[in-house]
Length: 367
Image 1 (tube, rainbow, N blue to C red):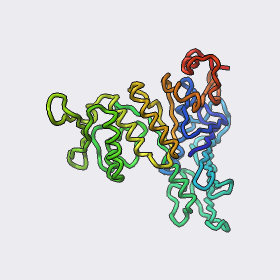
Image 2: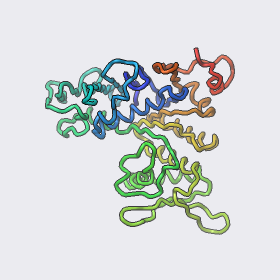
Image 3: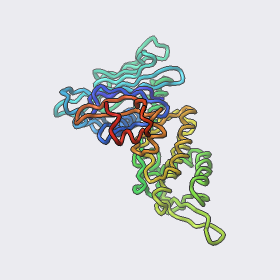
Image 4: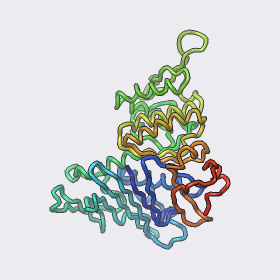
């Protein structure tokens, strides 16, 4: 799992370090930087996995406004099956030229496995006795298209682990009911291509659809099945069937005809089944939106089971019930005075007897 996130010179973060656990709730007022943490994780994934140009991901406007430094620095420490790995990225901003990679490193237990500096990539050989070196540009990461013969088992583990960082904010209104073949390889942050992703997932993993349907029969009253109805030219309509209330048989609805809460439940349980059994980091911004406490609590219980089995989840929430349930033992408080830098600290112990959400609402957690 990700054990450490270091961010310097990015939006409201100045030399800030987070140490998330297997399940961590980020809480604090709007503008404190909670979503910016998720944004950084998503962008680092895009750099390493997708090869996205850093100039597009890190424009000059993302630098911290009160700092007169042209370099942004990011670090992720990940606990692997055989030790600790660290990914480091430094981005240089040159006036008029945009952003480029200044330095990039992957370390294993402090030993360098990969580096990029001065337009040269250096890769430590598997036996540790020599370096493979070749020239590369700084517009994007060489890791994204590194030739297979240069990829050690350890480098492969790091890139595949970063690929399993999921950063999402469910917005039921944006979910398309039509699945399009070839459009579901990667789930968009707003889940707008959820139907396409669901089609791809059930095609790639036979047990995924069966497990999801079992869960939905428990949490969606009357749910019987979902299926994809061909629409022609590689398109399929995602349909849900429910028990008919007045006669034998079923009634069907297109995915976008379900209520917002029903769509949110489908999405959240699909995500649980997608990451089940994998070393993944699931980052969800306000998962409780559109759901009642009776609906979100069972999902949270399932999520806790997944994190205890080796997964990881980071959540953002302003919901009192979710805060009171998770924050006392799993909360990380982000605070910011005015337009200054974000400060991070564990949730302090309560001596008043009031719910934590009430203390936050009254501003009594302020020092």
